[in-house]
Image (cartoon, rainbow, N blue to C red):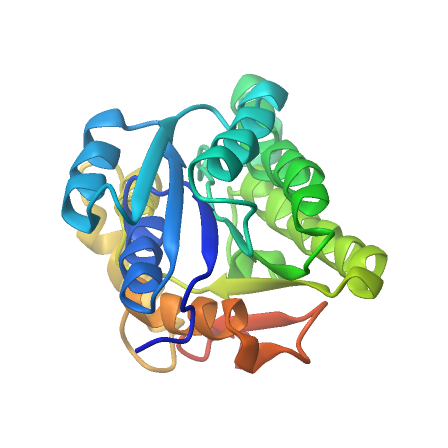
Amino acid sequence: MSRLNNKIAIITGASNGIGAAAARRFVAEGAKVFLIGRNEAALNRLRDELTQEKCDVMVGDIALEKTNQDMVKACSSRFGNPDIALINAGIEGAAAHIPEYPTDIFDDVIAINVRGVFLGLKYSLPSMSLKGGSIIITSSIAGLKARGMGNSAYVASKHAEIGLMRTAAIENASSNIRVNCVLPGPTETRMMRSIEENRSPGAAEIAKKEVLKGIPLGRYGTPEEVVNMINFLASDEASGCTGGVYTVDGGVSAY
């Protein structure tokens, strides 16, 4: 496997789930990766697994401007300017109808899921402008539909990510920078465990059964299945793809 031979990639939200799976796949495909997340122990374990020759890490909050500035500078210093940026970090927020939704949690979701994506774009794009590159934003099927009640902040943030992607794709096409969104459906990650518990406290298995009823394939996806799409969009095989929305949702969007 060498789709990403000699490429340099930044991955946010790389501590676990889709971000960690992408780090492993990118390295297997020949890339060097610079990872950022909030779980220092998990990042260090991943660096040890992937080797320091091919991987470096940074702990930080991607909702902060300085973190994004430092992330790009540190990647460029360690490996060179990035060819790929996977803007993947995100949080799920609370489960509550809008009148009861805690404003502070709404603000947290928007800060990480929207401001964090905006800042990731703001500082990644200039570093790619001389040679082109690929930016992939991990959105969600919630970027297309609400799929139930009680997740206003998450749904709003995922719709906003698609708007940012489309704007960035148009603005940077002349620089040969491609920008796309991948939209996972329910996926076997920490986030889905949290969503299940939020929807059905103390009985998460009940929430999972309800979610499964709305998935034509009848199962959750895996991080590796989502990364298959991310890896394609990161590679030169997707040279004609920009401004696109790519679902990996088990058929949910077909409803």
